[in-house]
Length: 308
Ligand code: ATP
Ligand code: MN
Ligand code: MN
Image 1 (cartoon, rainbow, N blue to C red):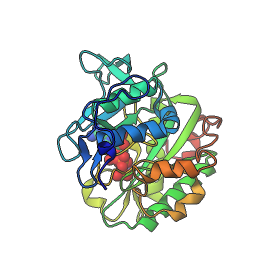
Image 2: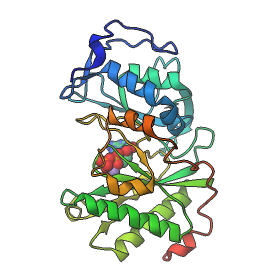
Image 3: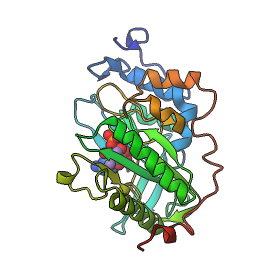
């Protein structure tokens, strides 16, 4: 299917005042989805997408000439700045300060789309409190020889072991090969505590289920196992935002699920630029309903992991 550009050829201002240039430009060549399709997608899911990136330092991946051409992973504001996008000066790991971008409105999102953004990758912290994490992400990365049913079982096991520690967790497809299990923290924790917890949890998992999991990123041992990528949980690390498009063939989308939906999906790329908005139209409730009301923290949890 060719994109919708044929219907809307001219550069029309998006609602909110960001003008989309080159709306007819093909971004996903295999499917024919255009820049206009991308803008229409983000406009359609905005109420669901925005809360996940709002006021969080956010890296974007820009594909100015489509997904088959070079992309740019960008965390800083380009010189000249962006009119509708927030900027915040934050300390880098090196100690130097840098200006990070963050979405502060729907217009921020549309302006980043205008500049070729497909993917949004927020921090697990807000701009006002960059040193405090309110999200832990367990990134489950199956090796090439791992079947989907094992990924499903792995996510369920992670959920159960977190529940045993008193932690409620939430599930998301990535739009790629795996799943993310997300743990909200309220009150939030400093990054050192989060890192210690994430690493401890991943090591314990790999230690007790050595055929299923691996907690080190050495490629050679990963083919038949699921890598629990705990490294997503440090200051400055990111994970893909819920409802972000991916710059991969098929225009897949990262989609939050209820746990009871997990058995009904067959891949981390189950949903795409068409089916993700269609799903939202059908949904009665947010699959992550209540995530902002969960009161849980890592205090008292680290000790239960054993080891440290
Ligand atoms: P998949 O399910 O295919 O693994 P994913 O989004 O989890 O999809 P990963 O490669 O596992 O992809 O990466 C997890 C997250 O880590 C990404 O969503 C991204 O935010 C971040 N990330 C990955 N690669 C980099 C990189 N080179 N630089 C900075 N952050 C990265
Ligand atoms: Mn992953
Ligand atoms: Mn990973």
